[in-house]
Length: 71
Image 1 (tube, helix red, strand yellow):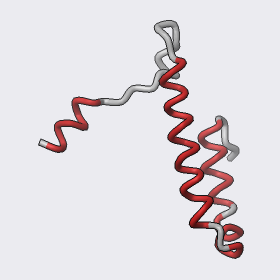
Image 2: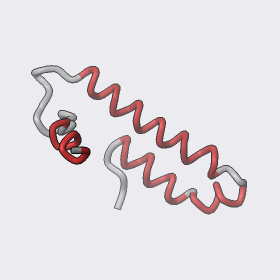
Image 3: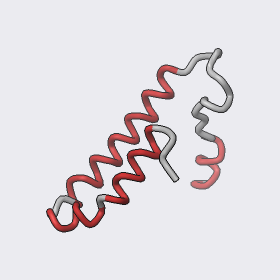
Image 4: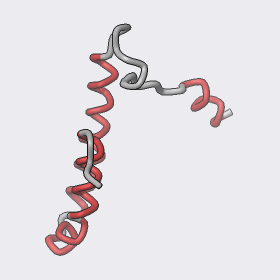
C-alpha cells in the first residue's frame, strides 16, 4: 500500500516516523507542525477551487451540520 496524494503521504510518513520523533523528543514540535500544514493545505484547496473543479476534488465543509451540533 502506497500513499496516493499529498495528504496521505504526510499522514503515512508521520506515522512511520512516530518512533523517530519520540526518540528525538520532537513530537511536541512535529505533530502540531503537521496539523498546521494539513490545515493550511485545506485552506489553499478551498481558496483555489472554482466552479470548474471536479466534484471529487471539491472541498465541502457542512457548516449547517457543524452549527447544529452546538445548538
